[in-house]
Every structure is written in structure tokens, then in C-alpha cells.
Image (cartoon, rainbow, N blue to C red; front, side, top):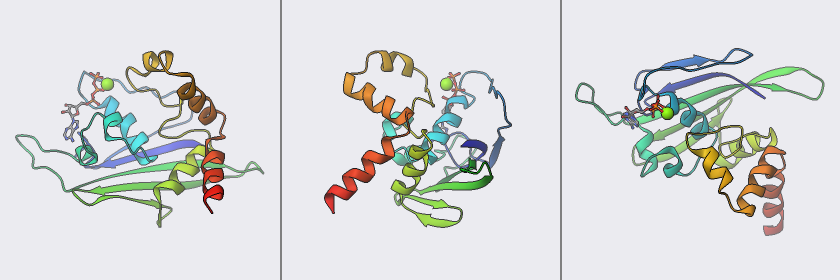
Length: 178
Ligand code: ATP
Ligand code: MG
């Protein structure tokens, strides 16, 4: 799985619609302090299903919505879309688009290729591809220290996510409940 494009609107400091095209190879994002580099990484984690506002440096999930400045009023919603290239068993590639939208006071909704899906469907899509909001593929500022200090059980969860088996645990818990 490869990220091809990230589109944001109303997400944190990205109040106007913005698009980041990620070509194969190395992509670097540079800019002065506070210009929104970390916000871009947080947008990727958010659309992958991040459920903890704290890990997105917010108090509540509505804090990801553009809060307004002296010049511009706050927004009522935020939307992030991630276009993914998926490689199948036979080597063929297809594109999938995951969208998450949040409305102030009304919570989040997800779409996969235009269909309404649950947060869990999105989380499983990424878990099976050995990535996701909590995977070690995404390293936020300050996380290296946190990984070193993690308890063994937390470190095991990271390894399982990296190995692509985190989705199996979710399905097993589901099956046990039925
Ligand atoms: P650094 O180099 O210091 O790590 P950075 O490029 O990673 O900086 P970010 O942390 O991504 O910068 O962006 C911080 C900016 O985003 C701040 O100016 C903050 O006010 C703004 N911001 C965060 N949340 C919102 C929001 N909900 N509405 C408007 N602006 C926001
Ligand atoms: Mg930063």
C-alpha cells in the first residue's frame, strides 16, 4: 500500500482545501516552526482512524477543525481524504480513497470509495497493510523517546501492528463475542 495523495479542508491550520501529492521515492516537507508540518502527519493518522484527540494534540476531537484566526472565522467541519495505491496478489494495482469528515458537535463519518463505512473497516484496511494510526510507520514528534520507554505489552502491540497481524486480533475478538 502506498499513499498517493492527501487532501485536506478545514483540518487544523489547513483551512483552505490543500492537496499534497506524494510521488514514489522520498518526500520531504520543510518549513518554519508552526507552518503545519506535524499537522499533515496528524491528518494522515486521523483519516486512518485515530480515536484519541490527545495524540493529535487536542482536548476533544472537534479541535482538529480549523478554530479561526483574527482574520478568518472558524469552520464547521474538517475533511481529510487519502488516495491509496493498493497492490494485489497478482501484482495489479488499484486506487482506493478513504475519507473522514467531522462536523462540529456531531462526530466523524468515514467513506471508502464513496461508500459509508465504519471506523473499524478503515482501521482493518490499514492494519492488514501493516500500517495505521498507531503503527510504527508513522513517527510523531517525541515518539522515539516514548517507544524506548514503552512497557513490554505496548511494545508488543507495536510489533504486531508492524507485522500486519493486528487486524487478526480484532477479528478474533469479534468472533469470540459472537
Ligand atoms: P514545528 O517545526 O515547530 O514542529 P510544525 O510545522 O510541525 O512546527 P504544526 O505543529 O503542524 O507546525 O502546526 C502548528 C500550527 O497549527 C499552530 O500555528 C497552530 O495554531 C495551528 N493549529 C493547530 N490546530 C489548529 C486549529 N484547530 N485551527 C487553527 N489552527 C490550528
Ligand atoms: Mg512539528
